[in-house]
Length: 431
Ligand SMILES: [Zn+2]
Image (cartoon, rainbow, N blue to C red; front, side, top):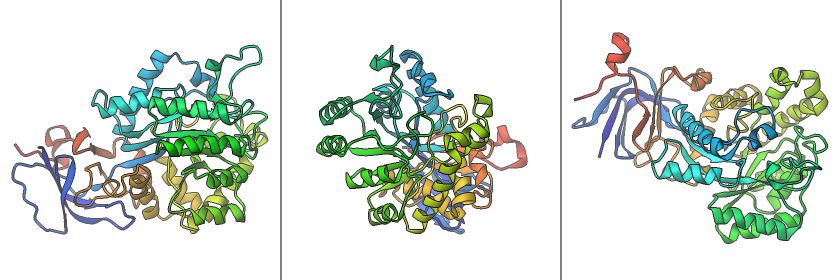
């Protein structure tokens, strides 16, 4: 069993508090002991990493991940990637996420039925490197809504980004298919999206009978329901039916906020606000000028989302970071940018931003008792960061500042040694 001692680090334990100097011993895949201050930890047989004052924090959890989004500018551009290339793409992206410090990811929908399941299984079996992963279904949607990419003259289901259903029985069949494949969660597109002409963000698409049928199956198998829900009515629908992870939640009213607060210990909100910002300000190269984005409704949604999320944060709703990276305007592995947005626009303190990536991350991964914090007995998913993320959160998306990534006690990105780093810093490895 390998043991690693991180010496001379600033421990940012993931609970939201300030870092403290100390050392952390990892044995096997777990954190064996945490020494605060100068408390000595036995080094016998351990690989010693001299952190030279770097920050040691829990690995981050991305709460709204789409490995199979292939950095295209449109849903069709994702969907038309052939399956064989798509599998390889997902495997490559999974490795990149892990090396970028995301030791856990919550799948929020994939582009072909089994992509997420196959990648999760390959990671768990040790066939490919990647984060801990919860596998999602494809988006389940209805004709005309977000995710229905069929064309009038080409009505083949393979052309659709999501799976189209009509009525409770078709819903039940689609959900059962994904459960048979082994997904951890079923994704329902309850609201529209400004991305889709004719189905903007504040519109609603599924009947209560359809959602109820889906959730009956989900509960029977002990799995989790998740929802694309931008409108207030869709957020309320998700809450009424026991859906646990709500993506976006841009539009709310007092009743919606009251319902969210009442269920705050059961639910998670992962808004993915970077895509709203990018559509408004950074998508011109992909044919979406600021003017066009305003016409599509993105300025109205941005304002509503900021107001809604600030209110949710005040009410103690767990808001998690990440979401909808994998489009041309929001490329993969810039996900930690959300943390900057949370501080800048949502009124988070840096500690709260860290906490939503760590403590809450362990909880959304259904492992809050052993994941997401630097605590004795917890799983050793750790990042060694050059600098203080509490002072400058942006360093978390700079690969050069991410000195090491550990998952399950094993380095996915090993720290530079004295040989590679020169005398400037004293990383060292015991014989
Ligand atoms: Zn999404």
